[in-house]
Length: 254
Image (cartoon, rainbow, N blue to C red; front, top):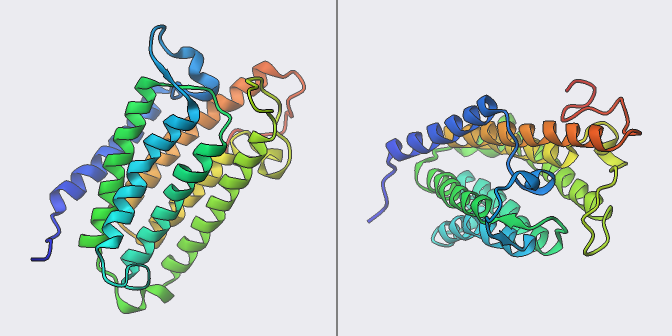
């Protein structure tokens, strides 16, 4: 018996994402990891960065690929399956590549549990909608929203991966010191890696043209935008020779 789309949990999940993003803006504080991990309360257990990133990102990959595996002609069927394939590709990279290469600081157990819960919930929301709720016309593959959205997704993912690579090269294995990132989009903004991921999920939202995807893109903008803002402040305080023309997130603007 085919699974029927239930709109109530889809709308509730989307509203939750939008509310979380709004609360981040209202609180005006960065998440306590990476450069801001010093704000973690004493006594909170810490997990190695590579293990934490692997485990917390894994649920989104498993959920999306698992749902795809149950679909006929998974990657070459309905547009929803193709779009879920893009979602899976992001989390494949995050789970199996980024996590093994990162040289970041250990993550607190609190941040790890929050991130894991988010990846489970958002993975289920995006996958469930695209597999069981999304309805696209046959010509969606030639629709401008799909074409531009997929282009932005690939562009953003490329910027994100390239920027993360540049940040890793600033440190030798085992180092925890900070240096000024230079080159690429770091010439213009302090949060080039964040900008790339924001562009990526905005492209995803445009290509899927769905409430859950736009809610996810909004949350990403709020969460990573706040991190970028505080990253920029961190660099300005730490380095007297930090480029004055460099912005936090949007070149020449913010």
